[in-house]
Image 1 (cartoon, one colour):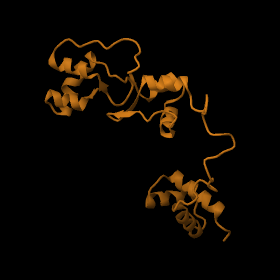
Image 2 (cartoon, one colour):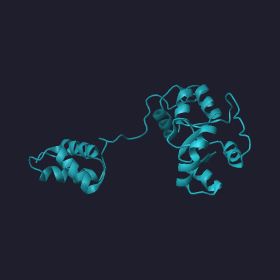
Image 3 (cartoon, one colour):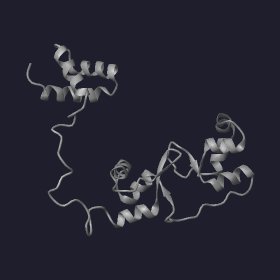
Length: 194
């Protein structure tokens, strides 16, 4: 696989020149491996043939176990959403895959194996019933150092609307206004009445 920056480098031109002058004709002859992706990645053999001015090899038709699938393609095989695929990879329900030019990909064989043997099914799968992951937090922001900041801000805010307090905290300390709104809500619920 190769991206346009590396193609431009192999062509000996700056990327901006490649994109302006050469990329339109290249894209007509060589299709991106992941159509619809914001990152354009091409087959290496096809890109090299184009640059050499030789006939561009045809990619094999059909599915192959070594095919690399992005999150959208993986989602289609598993009949879930792309965000679920990313979540599966994060939680270990699916291999982490590998990242090529900022696109995470999985071999088709891994996805088909996952489809045949979902976690938690079959002999020894999953956690025994009634067992948890360990002690649960009292609330989502327990032990979050920002909770103290939110509590202090609430105690000194007077009648200032919570959204304005959250926006000010986000600007001062980073994070989103929505996260600070959640922290302020939690602070108001866990703080002793003043």
